[in-house]
Length: 404
Ligand code: MLT
Image (cartoon, rainbow, N blue to C red; front, side, top):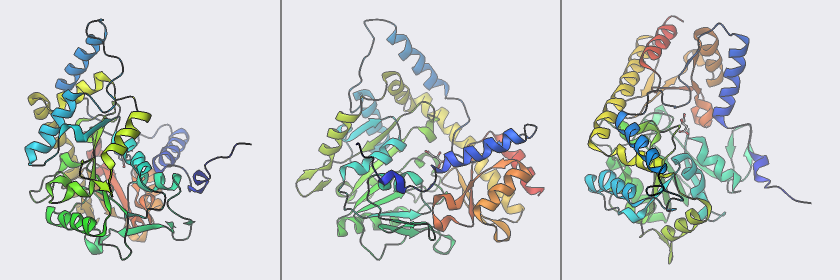
């Protein structure tokens, strides 16, 4: 008789955004006359920029002719895209990352869930709390997290680094020594970030204790302050301790297109073993490459026209962020984030729990957000709104919230 991976049985409930979607669908079905405004999941709403659409069209046309048709993509990504990434995301920022250290994928969610596979089951992970649920859940599936305590909503073998108002949402070095440290900066869900000097301290710490940092930079395009690093490789010593995961979803609207990449520097080793070689082996075995047409679209992100159009798109969403932040403050809410990231993190009013506030907002304002406790126990009493909505909807959502 076959056996299953029992670790899956340990996962409490469903994936956060699936739970929310189910609740919202039920509400909608029972209240078909209500116009819901969705500021929950961080999904973009603006169309793909024209320079990228043009690249997509022309790549599709190439597929229609035998001479320019493309079959399997190279499993690590096409050179044209890896070169564009190395040039624009790294060399232009003074980071020493070469094209052959970049692994193109179908998105940062897959990479951030899969990367743990190349590490021992015995490793201890450290995560910010609250945290993007994929990091913890993928480690639960791998059997690395110990047992779950429903009372504290914590795993026995996970090191939690609370990020709360009291520490300005900046993770502190944990008392116990982790082997793998997940950092997402600018942060999802809190919308806050840390300075480059603070990130340097994390790099120094990881090198000192022999930990690896898995650095999720999905929201990098939203950084507006000068003292914030756009890549962990801006920090001295990051090549020996950090893996960086990047997405095209948030900076270029690829949530439905799917493209991302992971950087594994060649100096990153465990004894003599190169993590770069391990990830290449894993990628080669389990992944057949992101589609040619999508990689051409990714290349267009770095064209002059693409860059200019995407700058405007990011500005559009950040105008939403400023609108939400200001509106909530005027309505008396305590609000964080929204300056270097497209997320607004607010304290729930009147001691409401995160889920109570979710229901309240859904029923009284027909606005969908994300309960902070869904991201971890330290998220309790907080709530996340995304700036990825259409501007008109964002304004209307704020009017409705102010009227409560
Ligand atoms: C979120 O809402 O946290 C993100 O959209 C989830 C994701 O990027 O996968």
